Image (tube, rainbow, N blue to C red; front, side):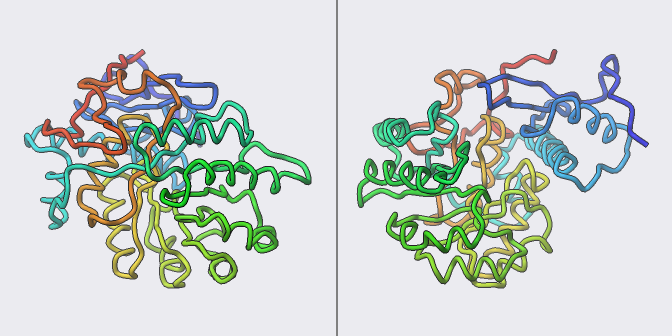
Length: 345
């Protein structure tokens, strides 16, 4: 039986708060008490329905939407609890995990994918150039997004090469395949991917496709990254044990909140795999991801941030989002350190 929609007149039921960013992006937030979380990437109506279920004490379904709502609620609850304790979220997480806060300035890489209005090498190169000028030494692009037809792989590789040319040999190019190419297609172009000198190649084979991961890893000289939708140990262990995954990328929204990300990160560390939280998100999830990253070892991969999507991003929260160049400086304020200016509708 489908759950009834959340009652908009009931103030005890958390409801999604949306902010339209671009044609592609809407930040979908949830407030729980005085804490905030993000549930972006699912429809607002579905978020409202699932939040109503959670408020009634019903179990959320083990689906992408259910996990995302759970992640948003756990983030908001952690934010509220840290505010009540007078602690930054990182310190609150440290108390609960017996892990120390290792850093308070988090290095970032620029994901330029959503800033691209045109899927052309010229547009990608110009956006990458802007990211470099802003201080970024690592840039990610998903060059095969939105491409179709028999020449899509060749066109995507042209986009990737254009970004590589801008970055030069001293900066890092990260490439996200978004599972748009099969393993066989990747292998046909293995040398071209190797020639890009990638910092990592993301979303090639599924995490449970150990054979596929190993084939890609053997053919392409690049670290492999993945795991943005993973929420449970059983989902990541095959890849971690395979020796073919180099970077695990749990997402604070989809993995079930900050504590769940840290549990997955501990599993990754046990297998010698680095962690870089997946975070093509708004300021709320970015703040939570930065506080999680404060407990991850320095010297590991940087944290993802969406670069160049809109110029007014930082002004949607108070105080303004603490992004400076290619770093996120944790604020000393309690919780995630910021509060959305968005008001509930």
